[in-house]
Image 1 (cartoon, rainbow, N blue to C red):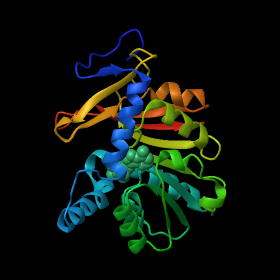
Image 2 (cartoon, protein in one colour; image 1 turned 90 degrees about the vertical axis):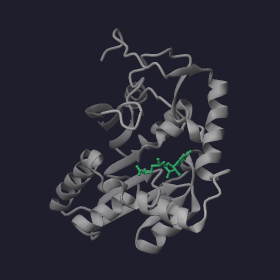
Image 3 (cartoon, rainbow, N blue to C red; image 1 turned 135 degrees about the horizontal axis):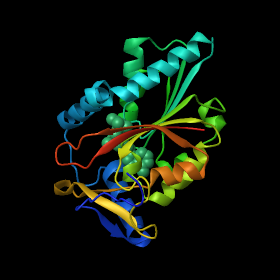
Image 4 (cartoon, rainbow, N blue to C red; image 1 turned 45 degrees about the vertical axis):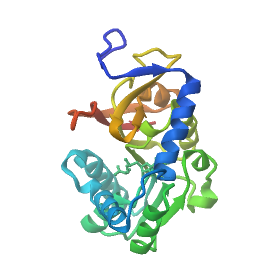
Length: 251
Ligand SMILES: C[S@@+](CC[C@H](N)C(=O)[O-])C[C@H]1O[C@@H](n2cnc3c(N)ncnc32)[C@H](O)[C@@H]1O
């Protein structure tokens, strides 16, 4: 797909940056405050269970295979493997690492806004770190908060689509100071900014739940800060949702 041959995505809408800010605040209420969701204890437990196993699911094999193979290479050189995750939920990738190779020589730092995910993670992995923060607060985190001044790998799986592009841009700029290898699962729509650069592209994800997500121009944002996309596994649309991709970007 090139800029000259944009794909047709009939359900994509283009909105102004001001409207995008309102949508971001709406998404923030949904994810951080779980506004209006009124989950009982059983529903929260089920949500925790689903997120715990998310990284063991077949479509995300490229994520876990990449993480495990970098971990093995790093460990083969006698170095600590470190991974930072934004929108970490309850740390599903840590469950995978623990099950596959154990957590010796592994430093994981998750960043997550929703309290129950954090409590669940901390109870299960007291030796690892989960910081309560949304992306705005995450931009202010530093090596003092992380306990290290660089990470081998950064992971954001289905997170940036909940964030309007200006914040994503600022976060990638922040990341570029301490991580050279990014693994991002997100929508492929508009990844090369095929749609109007002055508007923000959004698409319905679960419109019955009032979830509308952002189609961010990843390739453009990553290139701006010196990253190149070196792998791009496009996943088939599922459950009526647009095509998703697993991007690996390195400097
Ligand atoms: C669809 S879940 C994906 C969870 C996990 N990364 C995975 O792939 O299974 C989205 C995650 O992003 C978090 N999230 C949503 N908005 C966020 C924001 N503005 N800043 C940081 N995290 C956010 C949510 O709380 C949730 O944990």
